[in-house]
Length: 473
Image (cartoon, rainbow, N blue to C red; front, side, top):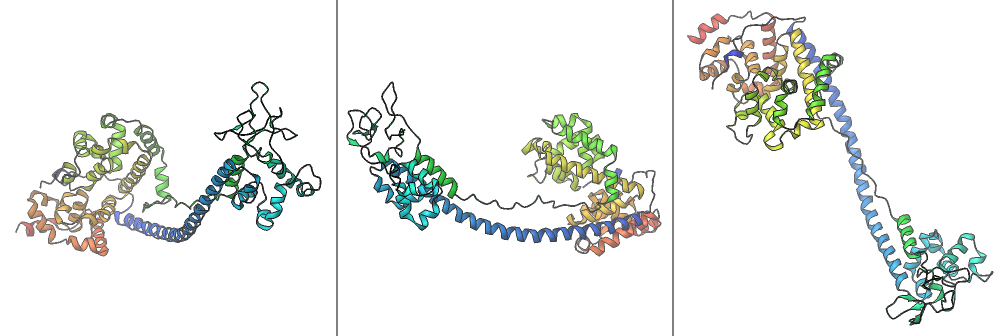
């Protein structure tokens, strides 16, 4: 495996340091610990809320299951009521049917009477409205209106306003002509959807002589019953949108930085234009968009190699030998995985949630570069702590410029080691570094990072010449 020597032996840049790297790192670590504790407290509080929420939601689910059973019964009762009204041939078979009577009572506000005095309910419904001493006329206005609505108390055969008998023909249709086979009881006229005048005669069309339809009492009361007796299902409390990640260096200084006009101008441009792209060609055709995206993955310097980046993006991530998978630097693979144009095209990039995530990442990367300008080396120290957990072999340290920088400087190993073949470099590094110890022991990471920053702060006052002599024997 070849190592890019340009990133190892390049000339130093002019520093604008305003704080020692070690002091800056300790300051950041303190802030990170405070944010970690605050985040842990928030998570603990959210966990408690989650337990309560799940308990309440379990109760809601149980209640809803009961409501669904009740609602199914209500629907069944309403359907039964309409069917019974359609098939009844006498008033008595309806009045004596408790299930029919139940729907009628609750639909009209007489549920209590149905429960407590069902016989009185029957007496009201069958009252003779022409008799001032009937139960309905001696009762409340509401009771009289119920009796009037159904008019079950009407007696005799139903006639129309022309004196013709109304009844069923041989096919079961209600007619008022010579085809009547069975006369319709007057007490069922309204329930059978006939319009009746004040004298109880069925109204007819003056031109055709046919019966005029009245209110569909059965359908109306079935709907009222269903509406009044059905239970609205309760809504479970939704879990709040969970922000699983938090920025370890969140604080007033970061907020001041991210709100800078130049930073927000770049963010606004990206969010406004990334949603408009239709292809990778559009992305690569807008250098400002392309550079912003790379910068959010800390790959801004790679913007000068669009061909390389395109090949990485178009890599087959299922192929371990693809370009994206061959890079030791995890940033390239992360970029390819997040966009994955082979599967999604540019869809993932154009989503608002993705644009927000890229913008957030950009602000954080830019801030850490800003910190590094004040205290050169501090960003490498930060990144080392983040990336070391993903390292399994020493060779990975050598392939990642950040990890390599910290390991070499922190152990006072000269950069000229890059002139050796990879196996020799691995052997040299393993004399000083135990990858497994770094992965499993945070104190080992802390010690290495502190050595790195100390050497960085003192401009490398170790003895690389003597080490080279030992190295080359």
